[in-house]
Amino acid sequence: MAEFTMELNDEQKEVRDWLHGFAADVIRPAAAEWDEREETPWPVIQEAAKVGIYSLDFYAQQYFDPTGLGIPMAMEELFWGDAGIALSIVGTGLAAVGVLANGTEEQIGTWIPQMYGDADDVKVAAFCSSEPDAGSDVASMRTRAVYDEAKDEWVLNGTKTWATNGGIANVHVVVAVVDAELGSKGHASFIVPPGTPGLAQGQKFKKHGIRASHTAEVILDNVRVPGSCLLGGKEKLDERLARARERAKAGGERVKNAAMATFEASRPAVGAMAVGTARAAYEVALDYAKTREQFGRPIIDNQGVAFQLADMRTSIDAARLLVWRASWMAINGKPFTAAEGSMSKLFASETAKKVTAQAIQILGGNGYTREYPVERMHRDAAIYTIFEGTSEIQRLVIARTLAGVPIR
Ligand SMILES: Cc1cc2nc3c(=O)[nH]c(=O)nc-3n(C[C@H](O)[C@H](O)[C@H](O)COP(=O)(O)OP(=O)(O)OC[C@H]3O[C@@H](n4cnc5c(N)ncnc54)[C@H](O)[C@@H]3O)c2cc1C
Image (cartoon, rainbow, N blue to C red; front, side, top):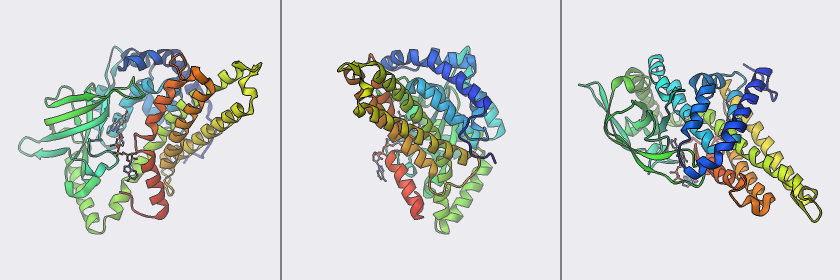
């Protein structure tokens, strides 16, 4: 087990500086344009693919970093550049992790390369879990997957919503109900290969922020996928369902708590995205406060402004520490006895919303216009308290964990 450290090693510093350079030179200058266009920034993804940032290799290298700091460091730098573009770059990684975590070696080898494509022909992937009536309440999911034994095929029917890259993805990973009696333990994940009939994009959402990231409904109408597209395979699924049924009979508590560890491990990554956006807005505000003069002196000379900056910086550093702690715990298999993953996401996302609002205030009228980036950063920051579990759900998880009450 790696010791917890707050110091990046030389290799990590090198990667961080490289990512920062890409974020500063390629992502940030493109941010306003793609925010206005509200389209996937394919040329920027392609640039990221050319230099090796948009690839499974890069993502896996950071993911398996034993210090746990690889992913949060990478997320912070990319999202410092711009949240919408960065989500377009890392969105595929979220679907790929679903396959890495649950897929067989053959599935990983077959599908992950098709998720990314290559630098000459980049592709993206989508992870589709949320539904119109199953957002926070994942267990009420309705999309069904029924096994057609004669053809060794699964038939998927339902409507997914809010899918990042939904409908434009080469590969979709779809979560569906295979046993409705078991709540979220009766769910399984399926690969929907490129060009499969029956999968269609529904409405594309026009959003408040992260507008360079494509978000859409995905309609599944009698989508037939081969048996080999069930992540992990049928034998493993049957064993898992049998165990879940046994546990459900025995009271259900272990079934419910088992679901938590996965989310606790993935939530700090979203916290790190929020830290990146918050830091970006803070830096703009600090710079502005030092150079903007009113009443014959820089506005930072007013305690009312300087104290805001002090609070912003303090919250950002505290958020990063919570994120790094939770990421270190996740990679080292430490039990989340106080829902530390949820804590990090809750604090970092609330910090991003607050800090970006403070940045607008410090820039005054300029902060309220699209001439300066903090207006966009504030719109972007609002997503962090919503996706990957809302702030209310994080509080619910933390509270229930502390109280020793099962988490639904
Ligand atoms: C831009 C964007 C991208 C997304 N990308 C993806 C994706 O790629 N894949 C995917 O599967 N999903 C994705 N999502 C979905 C996201 O995870 C959900 O929006 C989120 O889980 C909340 O669900 P909901 O929107 O249905 O809100 P609801 O669950 O309807 O919640 C509405 C409000 O009620 C509150 N609430 C609900 N239950 C409780 C409770 N028990 N106690 C207290 N308060 C409660 C919530 O906190 C919230 O404030 C994305 C969403 C957005 C906006």
